[in-house]
Amino acid sequence: MTDDTLVRDSAARLFADLVSPELVNAAENGEFPAELWSAVDEAGFPDALAASTDLAGSLAGIGDAAAILHEAGRHAAPLPLAETMIGRWLLESAGYDTPDGIITIAPIERDGGFSLRRDGERWQLSGRAATVPWARRADAIAVIADGQVACFAPGDADIRPSTNLAGEPRDDLSVDVTLEAVTRAPRGVDGALIYRLGALSRAVMMAGALDQVLKLTVQYANDRVQFGRPIAKFQAIQQQLAILAENVAASGVVAQAAVEAAAQQGDLAVAVAIAKSRVGEAAGKVAEIAHQVHGAIGFTHEHRLHHLTRRLWSWRDEFGVESDWERELGRLVALRGGDELWPLLTGS
Image 1 (cartoon, rainbow, N blue to C red):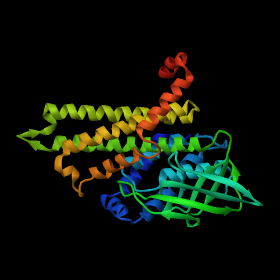
Image 2 (cartoon, one colour):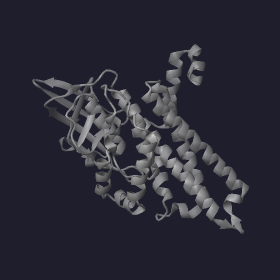
Image 3 (cartoon, one colour):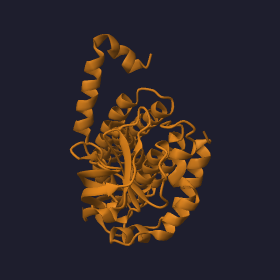
């Protein structure tokens, strides 16, 4: 695997150069950032998850992918990058003739689903899914249904456009389409894994956004002078900044632990459940504190803070909210039994 520090630095430079507040505002008003996507695609970022995969279904490229997504989250890059990474990985792992361009995945919540049935030499795919990321902008939509990997064009679906709180496309769709061919999903690759990878991508992106919120908040607290001294000198503000920093640090640790579990074929189910629930909890606390410290300026359209906090509020709800993953974690722990609790906690 490529040194993810080099990958992270490359992504950081690209996003810092190209993702301006004006670009994010324009994207939230419906203007797709085509030049930014072209630069990201040319850099090979959408293929990061699939590029290091020699074995079908391997997650060897997850470290590089996570490094890129962390920086995308830090800069609030308005792109379908995580979805395209997972979609290309899924299709290539299944030996599918992967289309170029933007690929999204569906469903992103457990209450959606698709079914496949034989229709002579063809296949009939039907189903529906809610809040599919970037469905109307995608060149293809990848799904797993009945152990098979399928891909269809957005034009083959009935799409009802909507957006999340950050202005990113989140569309409801239903489909009933005939496909020429599908491919069998590799061993170990199923809808549950795709769902976990989606949750992991959101946890990593949130960790990046949280890092940037901390940086902005500390800088503002040191720059803002009240009663003759920076507000960062006031004990009440210091206590709030300490809580903020604690949550940011915890989020980075659990997100990285989940990435390492995926790369090393560890207990991904438990690691993702911990990461998505803990980072989601931190997102709420950090956004609240950051806006309290910034005061009125943090709520203005001109300030960068809202680009990050609205994405934190949106991403925490996608691929399962905290309570969903907390229940999942409890279920996984209970299945292992009491004797396995300590080894699970200590990693021994």
